[in-house]
Length: 381
Image 1 (cartoon, one colour):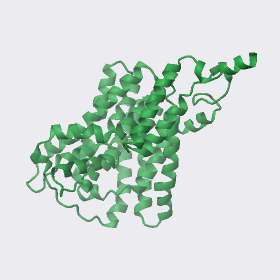
Image 2 (cartoon, helix red, strand yellow):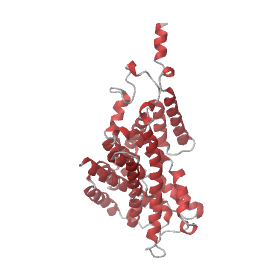
Image 3 (cartoon, helix red, strand yellow):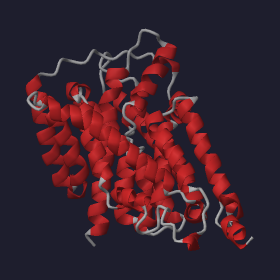
Image 4 (cartoon, helix red, strand yellow):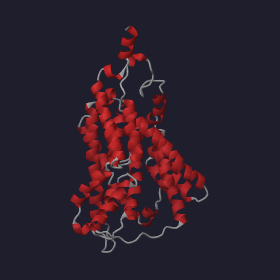
């Protein structure tokens, strides 16, 4: 009986705060539902959702099992090292660079302004977090959620607010996955039927030389402005030159397929597991989720409204379809895809995908640059 009693004391059913773990398990199951049934960012939400299940199996802390993600010496803790030390995000950026075509941006450089305008969500969220009582460093880390860039949010929070990383990462990836749900209502609200029908000029063909020069100039320009973004933007542009140089196809293919897939698995699983209920279910987490939703809506609205503002100064025939301003957030290529599908609902022959990719890839650069500016300021004090 003593052996049986001891065995039962170590099972999940008798652990304190079991209801909290069950609540988080329900969240994990919801993420898996969104990924599998709705196909919302399955490559992200399946690892994160399963990670939430993994991290919320209750166990006796005093059993010295070393299985929890926050327990030194556990396997999950070792894998989580890549998150806490900001190793995984630059590797994700390397893979993104290796599969990204900047032609849409190079063919119409003014679209870069839309990517910059969408970053207003970052700074307004920062101010909102400060007003709610978060410290400046915490507010800066929370603000990056507004860029809809999961790797950048993780990288920034690992440096400025590691204790909030789980909530920030889950919020950032959740809103990235919910792009098809959150963005269309904002886009419809802020545009007129006539604006949604605007057809843009076809993109020009970008010569190979421009594609090779761009990552070099992009690296030097952005990192001179924001040195704190060097790990992210350095890897992004490095991956891109591997792709565009034409002489490192094997390296580009590895970075854009095998490497990014492996890192995505490890990052998603460990970020999900970091939502251990005892550490994750706090009032701060709820505030972060709320701020994240608001910031994402603000970022979407900022891009759309700035496109409308630009049209005031553009000649007829050169005007921008304001819908593509919503793609200024960093959710690549999902935000551009949402813009394209919404545009075709109003005009089936209006193909906005390539145009939307301009502000979309610009948003990746913009959010990383904004993160670099914040890191340089707060870490350089």
